[in-house]
Image (cartoon, rainbow, N blue to C red):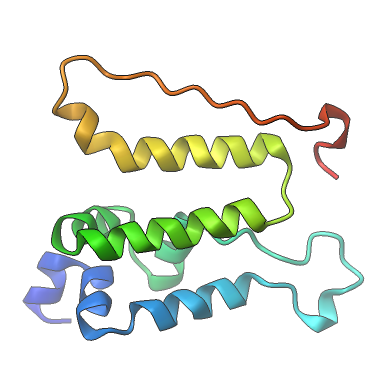
Length: 133
């Protein structure tokens, strides 16, 4: 890895090379259940931003660098993983926790620049008895 890659981060480097979206698709496919896993109940993984960072061998700071260097690509990446979260069969409790953390992560820098931090409330209507199924 050269010094430029260290300064911008792995995700920015992949974005500038045009390979980020293919790797993102690979990661999402790697989370899908394998045909041999049909007997197991939890045979798929929930594709998420932290998981992508783990897959790439990096951390969440790389996402912040992407936001600074490639804001439209950062926005696209967030949209991809929001779509994955909303279409993944997951309990409402876990989904609300993920979305809350995702939205807070996205607005950290904006909140630091404001004197009054806006409050965000989440309400996911779901069958409380269906959680964990």
